Image (cartoon, rainbow, N blue to C red; front, side, top):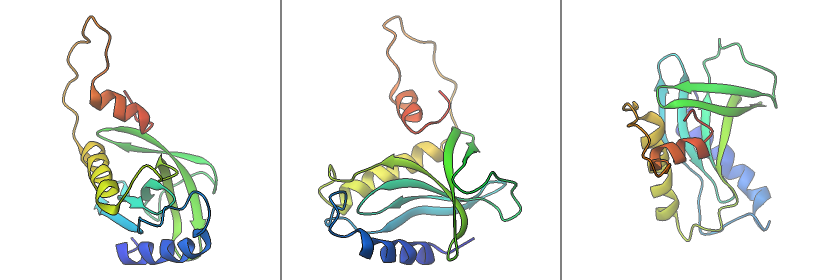
Length: 153
């Protein structure tokens, strides 16, 4: 498992090439929140950059995965999340699921960090049984957010 510092350093270097592009929000910085090992899954966290926010997953080295650029499913108790596989000399094999891009709606790091913390809370939550749907047909906030992240509903 790569360290949080190594992943952040890699994306800071990428940021030097992104600065000045319309998708780049200079009020934000690279930060990997919640980076932790998850038994049987690998390591997982939320990566914030000035141009995107992604669920960042580093599968175990022995995991059998499709080729770079293909999709893989990250299965957690909170649901299944479809990720795109990447491969890099520095980071090796990893996968990501886009949460937000571009990042222009976030005025500062505190706001984007709060969103990332909420995503982490939902992703790592062990789901409670869903109540019966109401007659109004409205989805719960958790169901709506899980669907937005590509997880099971």
